[in-house]
Image 1 (cartoon, rainbow, N blue to C red):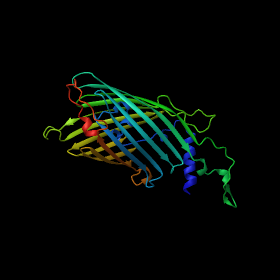
Image 2: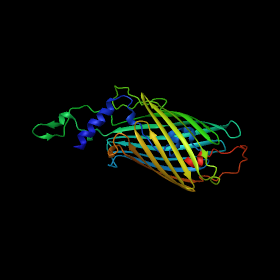
Image 3: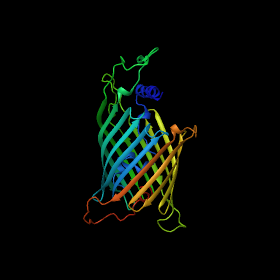
Length: 324
């Protein structure tokens, strides 16, 4: 019975213009920096390789989002990033894949302040396997399910360019950013006569770092955060707190009227590991809405850089070490 149910759900999503359910989501926000804000490309001041995977529900193939990305520095004040992201819905009936590159440039505003500008460009591709759908005229009262249908199928795939921009402000103990994703609103409809387009996503994020003075330097820290997103008429507010101690980082987030998120991270010098779980507020026993997410990040030197005189005398924002 799963196939007809998936068909009804999928056709409902396809019939709702600018559905927010089609936008991929990660709960380990800062573990996917170029996805959150292109101005974060290269913010860690090192080259990194990041893998993230998220699944929704007990069935690992029902709803999944996977990402592979790299980012690094360009000179002393710029950064680059590249990401391949794949979002699979209804066991692969509908897939969204994006290929993006990001460029960021940071401007010194003072001793401990920076302003960053980011641009992300890429290809947005959506595919639909019409052959796995079941329609009303395929059911016969005597013979049951037949293999033929008179439904007119649309295209199997649609591809378009995708552009995002971002702004980032950082200081030693505060950071904040604003990004607009899909600013060009690429067309995503499988039917040529329709003009359904992807909604722009507006993201405002900010946080701070509180050093716990009674612990040794670079020891225990608190980081309160908020992330606000708007996609079409839908709004999401996330309020959270990270606590970092030595190699460990634990986090708790509240997604307004939706879910609680619990995360655990481990920093082993060049390797960072993260795990998070989203627990729905409406029904804690509903495994369909429970999401699991894992991340892996590896820091390295892509190209040996020549020593360049650093004219920046301020302190680096400490949130880089806690969140990235």
